[in-house]
Each structure stands twice: as C-alpha cells, then as structure tokens.
Length: 419
Ligand code: HAM
Image (cartoon, rainbow, N blue to C red):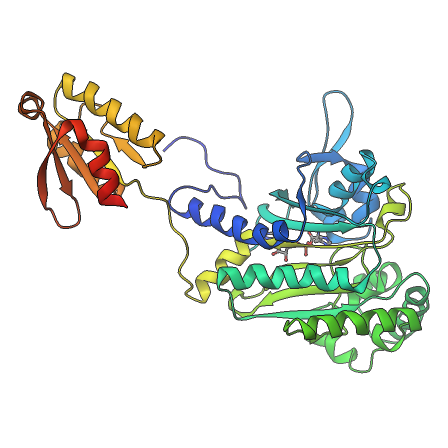
C-alpha cells in the first residue's frame, strides 16, 4: 500500500475486470462501425463556456457537478462532463458540417462529474457515445436507438427498457413551457422547487419526491402540446422502431438532465441497478449548434454508460468476457535454457501464439506457480539435461500430463496442439 488512494468517487480498472470493460466498449462500438460511424477523440477538457452554453446554465451538471479550474495561463477550462458538446465543437471546428451530411461519429472515453458517489454513480466514469450531426430525419433517430438496442443485444443484456418521449421544438416547446409553468405556480411547492419551476419547469416533472409527484397527477404533458410537425415526426420514429422489433415505452414525463434536447428523447433504464437506473440516454438536439455559435445543424445521439452497463450485466448474471489468458508459459531452468526459451517465446508471439515467461529466476516451484496463475494451457519446461538431449518438456497444466518433445520442432508442435 502507498500513502495514496484513488480519489473519492473513482476507481481503478485492473485485470481481470479491466478486460470486461474493454470487451463492453468494443461491443457497444461494433454496431456503430457497421452503420458508418467514424471514431472521434476530443480532449478531456474544454473551455468552460462550451458546457455552460451547451449543457445549460441551470442544469445540475453545470451548477454543481463540473470540475472547472483556471489554468496557469488564465484560461477557464472544465473536465468534460459529457461528450455531445465537445463532439459537435470538434466537427464544427473542422468544418465537417460543410461536407456530406449527416456526419456520423462515435467516441469512447472518460467523463467527469462532481456528484455524490454511490453505487453506479461516480466522479470519473466511462461512456461510449454516438452522434449523428446535420440531418433532421426520423429514420436517423430510429437508427441511433436501434444501434443501442443492438449493442445491448450483442452484450446479452435483456432486462432493460427503452423510455421514449418527444420534447417538441422551438415552435411548440415554449408554448408548453408556459402552460406547465402556469400549472406549477398553482401547486404547493417549496421555495427551491418554485425557483426551478421558473427557470427550468420541465425538471420539476422529474422530481422524485412523493409530495411533488402526487401534485403532478393532472399536469399538462408535452405529448398533448406537440405541434403537427413534431407529432408526425415522433409517430414516424415510433413506427420505424416498432418495425425494427425494438420495444419501447412512451414516457411523457421523461426529461433529461441536459438542456439541449428537442423532439426525440430516450433513456435506457435497468431495474437491477437501484436508484441509478439509467444505463444510457440521449436524444435529438436541433438547437445545440446554434447555442455554441455554429450554424443550424439538427442532430441526434446517445451515450451509454460503460460502468452501469457492466453493473446491469452482472445483476442479470450474464457471463462477462474475462482477461485473455496466454496459451503457453515458459519455465527455463538455468542460463542457457533462459536464452533458448526466451527466443521460443518471442517466436511464438510473432506467429500469433500468446506466450509468457518465468521472469526473475524463480526456481522450478515458483515458476510453475506463475505458470498456473497465468492460466496457460501448456507450460514449457527446459532444463540442462533437456538441452543436452535436444528436447523440451510440454506439460498440459489442466491435466498435469507431460510429454517430451524435440526442441527443434517445438513451435510447430505447439501450434498443432493449440489449433
Ligand atoms: P447522460 O444521460 O448524462 O447523457 O449520460 C449518459 C449515461 O452515462 C447515463 O445513462 C449513465 O449510464 C452514464 N453516466 C452519467 N453520469 C454518470 C456517473 N456519474 N457515473 C456513472 N455513469 C454515469 C449524456 O451524457 C449525453 N451527452 C448523451 C447524449 C449524446 N445525448 C445526445 N448525444
């Protein structure tokens, strides 16, 4: 142990669990790659103003959860709490919006929110995300939701639900907002909630307290206030999802924690996770580009939480991919044997056979322990006498069976045994 521990709300990824994280990220990315999404990587920090303008000044993320600081040079920067505003910023900066649209991008990385840590909620967490920029087409909304469902199917996750809603557009949302505000003003709410109702009334719908939910029984819903265009758009998304065999539940009270959403919004929730039930979420953000100083660029995307998805898979008892084991573990006894076997290990690796070596002059007993721990199928044991006789011992670790094999053909022999 050292004096230091990982900071509160963070954890290290170490073998064997780290292999699961890699595999889950890959499984999430696979459907995106098949659908023409290109990989994007942006810095871990951005101008603070990008998130203030993009995510929204009154959101919990911006008011309470950002890791913001002033650099030595006086710049105001923030560790990215999410990936949508940075991805859009990068695409606009590179003028990708002037080429063929939509621009389809995916990312995988670390995000940072100063939240109260609990199971499934961390200060440093991992997302895989997808953003389709520059097209207003219900098929694109459907595509993005289908690709997430395909990723979960690939992982074997079953007990999750897709909640779907439409938040309207710049025509019908302001009208609904005013209607909702009128309704909320007539309720018996505490000071803080009253304030929230003035700044961001939709957030009140998401209040988890019974005392508030009870009063929301007859609340006007966005679904009843959608303009004709939004209603038709939403219907088309629903039709396409249904045709693709993707089940969803309409949730007219679904609101998201980021301010940029318009029209289609959705969340993937899992019931085996306790209060942090969202394994992923996203939606359309037709106004975000303009909010950060760009041209009109209607877009849609999602981010899936890698950490929570793994918790969900575990809660379902899904077998998770573990660490890759090596096939062969080499145990040399003596200096000449070390040289010979080291060469063999290098050759095996170059031929695509995974192999490891007993480093550190452990002696036979210690080296065999390392071989067992490595999970290798075969141990190669080479002593002085073996060298003199031109042979090597090949031990199958599971059965303990050992055979003597000519040293000169060992690589071919092993390739045959492993094929
Ligand atoms: P979000 O809903 O804030 O959306 O995050 C997406 C997912 O990231 C969540 O569903 C959850 O699984 C995971 N997540 C968020 N915060 C934490 C945390 N503190 N600890 C562990 N996991 C967490 C966004 O970030 C949007 N950028 C999604 C998007 C993309 N919308 C359009 N495009």
